[in-house]
Length: 429
Image: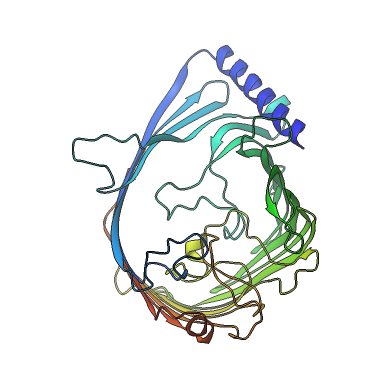
């Protein structure tokens, strides 16, 4: 896969540049932009015990704090006569006050996206995109743009899209990390299809592959370090009829992680019903499961969620990730008047395997009780989010979350309940 990953984007870029050179002139140029600033407060800052899992020993479980993040994006879209499109998006993302002085100028500007599209390849319903791009599919449980974070997420590579009729089939290959030496790259790619076999029904089968040639993955039982070569197969389905919206997704992982065999799975099911259309009153219920691993026996059973948009899945406080977890959620949303939207959510979290680790939304290991004596009750969470659209292109969003620690948390060192809140201003054009 390494060789294919290296050849395909290079050939794609060469072909795309040839199209651009042959094109006479640009027909349209449009611009877009975004400015976002967000203040957050968190108490406690971290559930990792001081001196464990990478946390400094001098820190304390009672630490609390706040921060303000700022993001600015400016994009330019170029459309050419020959069916070629280009897009460049600059981004500056920073934490306010993080520079050493008000006279300092730390470089935070980067290319968030820079891609070239070529349509109708060979006269068929094929399009090619090459460069740096966002990849987002389905409910973003597997692959999303992670827009909540300051930097967001984008990939370097190439994507081929085929759209025969109402179908869409994407094949892509990307570099997650360039290892320089042959065979040491981190390559991520796969196929993702969107099928619409009937009115109100979508079916999305997928096959996603990771080929990580570096030696940063450890076999649990032996401690041997080697690469990761796995695949995530599954499908997402969505059915809508009238006021009902039902979604389900299933993922199976297999392959090798160092010398361990990978055998893991995850799934979700969610139903949403609109009770009252005028004020968009909706009630939802959801169940999610991601397997854990309770025995170091040469088989890795803990599900790895790849590249999800985690903030919207398992509570806004982000203390729970889609790995070794069972989660139940109830949601209520409504719009009291046109510019306002309110979302209320309640969650219950338990470990799928009491002997395995507790993982947060960023994939960080927080704690573990290897003998399982702390039980599996992680806790409860309540979320409130209020959105005000002040005018077109201008939104103010605020939220408050409370995580009530369960027996597992209190038995493994405590830290108390967690409070998280934010206030965000978003302007876009």
